[in-house]
Length: 361
Ligand SMILES: Cc1ncc(COP(=O)(O)O)c(C=O)c1O
Image (tube, rainbow, N blue to C red):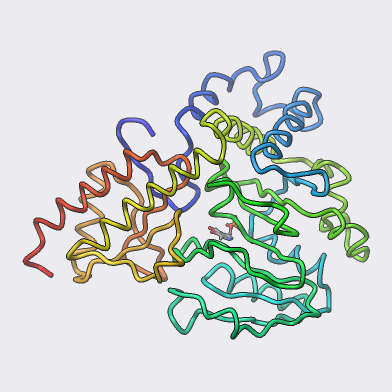
């Protein structure tokens, strides 16, 4: 992020500085004097790049050949509908609702399947998760759906739920933020615009035997299996977004891979939560064991200070800290591209703001 500007946007969000530099240096010539903005997804240069990028994300997440990796369009929201259409058409599926995004996915699910809400954290304003022993799981469900990180409410489930049916995880705001065991899941999807680049690309990592021979009533464009067979080039691919994701994969590898990235992300979140918990005027409402590493909402007790906080923070170069319109307050989204210096600068600013407003709480 140039000029000491730190972008805390929830998505689309900050890109690693090195990635923007590479885009600048390559933008005029990706292949034989042509820009990546003007080449075909079927050109041999792009196909080679696409293969390399798939190999890199497979290396990063340790994805074996039992899984397909798809580079699709339509955003994560499109997955809310593609999933039940492919995997549970007119059958039933379990949904764990822990925030706005899983709630929306369950609503979309209703168009295609019988949605069973296993548990809904709405009663506690999406600040905690009910005890797993109280969940109403259906062993005949085609799949169990959840979002391990709720971007708006900042609630994160750190352990994969133990269920007896295929597990689907919306990892839009947490993919590649630390090592995971892909084999714990049957299908993972994630919009790229938070941890993997820019809007326009959605990554799907699907177990082959989950998607094979499914949904033959659907046209190919809606079927996972067709996209897998065509290596995500069934129709025109999102060339530029895919190119940027490829640069982000390389950047993560250059940083030392997901282990290193995960340690940095953990430290960033620890420092901000510690500051908030020990402060006088700020608080975060989420149950400590379910706090997100990526999206940290916080409020000021006296809400009339919120607007001042946001405008003063913005003048200091701390951008996009406004909480989601449905939640209010503030939210710091700290994906991989947010350096620890940005978090330290935010904490320093919060402390300065607090010291000047102690009499207004
Ligand atoms: C967890 C999660 N799921 C789904 C979405 C929807 O993504 P899109 O706007 O790409 O459809 C978002 C967007 O922020 C999200 O954070």
